Amino acid sequence: MKLIKKLKMNYLNKKIKQFFEDYVKRENAEKDDRTFQNETIEECLENKYECTLCEYSTSRKCYLLKHVSRIHQNIKNYSCFNCGYAANEKSDLKKHIESVHLGIKHHKCDHCDYQTLRKYDLKQHVNKLHVQIKIYKCSNCSYESVQRNHLELHINRVHLGVQDYKCTHCDYQATEKRALTRHINNVHLGLKNYKCLQCDYQAYGSLDLNQHIKIVHFGKHKCDYCDYQASFKYKLKQHVEAVHLRIKNYKCSQCDYQASQKTLLKLHVEAVHLGIKNHTCSQCDYQSYRSSDLKQHINRVHFGIRKHKCSQCDYQATQKCKLKLHIDSVHLGIKNHKCSHCDYEAAEIGALKTHIKGVHLGIKNFKCHHCDYQTAYKGDIKMHVHNVHLRIKNHKCTQCDYQSFRKDQLKQHVNNAHHIVKN
Image 1 (cartoon, rainbow, N blue to C red):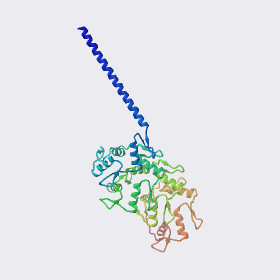
Image 2 (image 1 turned 135 degrees about the horizontal axis):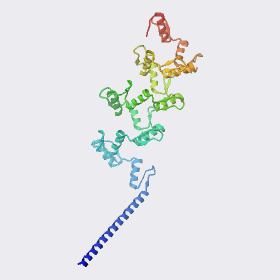
Image 3 (image 1 turned 135 degrees about the vertical axis):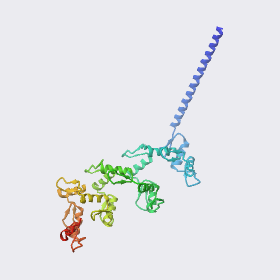
Image 4 (image 1 turned 30 degrees about the vertical axis):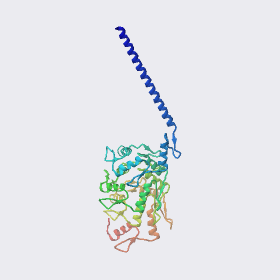
């Protein structure tokens, strides 16, 4: 019995040993196959098919042919039967039909009502609006973008100044084709297909209409410190930092000028140090580096439009801020800018600088072309020419024949001669 039991044990041990030996052989064989497959893949990857027109490369020839026909030859073999859409690949046509004509959008945003056909578009939407991950950074400035094409457009427009799309009707140039199309439809053709349901406003694009509705009908962002209102939250932030906090991070390298915005510093350098004034008045010699200043000049000087009127006197201004300065300085006596050399006080820092240059430094940049008269104030030159050389006296007394070029002199005459006090 013991011998039989021993023989059985030897037989089982041989079977088990044989089993493990076969198992190890199979494992080694599969490992060799995987190694061979990996080496084959690596060899395939090494034998790349490279495009001679760009830097594209692939491991398969069919992919290269598809790339050339789609990108460089722009061959679109798949056309939509419902509209004029055409695609390079059948899958793109299928996606177009499902999204545009059937309204099928499988991918939904968890944070809002946004829906899209492509998973990639949903990811872009979440990153752009909700997460705001800006992975594409400009190497020349602090600009960041969610999308790569936005960064490329920024570099071409801001740093390279590339504007490939030119208008055939005027001098307008654009970096994007859609911007040129929008310009032509809006400016030259006058197409405004988007109409506001609450007023008569019409717009060329849906974005402009939505912006109008938000600004006009849905209210504005209000400042907690004053009556200022802004259409956008970022503009309110700029206002608070510039006006109330007086944060001016952008400094001029050539003088003491400081600005709260980079664009304002650029305008200052171009106007003051480079003398660049691209906006010229067609009716006189006035020039400005800002289109808004030119518009105000035309309304004030040539059209006589002054919308903002003082409730305490006859003063009128083209800007609300000018009216506020007038009230603070004339009626309230608020003059925060004081001269360190004399008792002179001014409501604006520009007036104080002009006073110092003209009175204490003797700098008189404005000269009369008819005589030797010089002054530090531009308005005094105009007054001098009209009064001395042209003899124009626009201010007339209603009580007698007295005439004067200056309004303050007429006021003084009325007070002294007729004893009529006007505030």
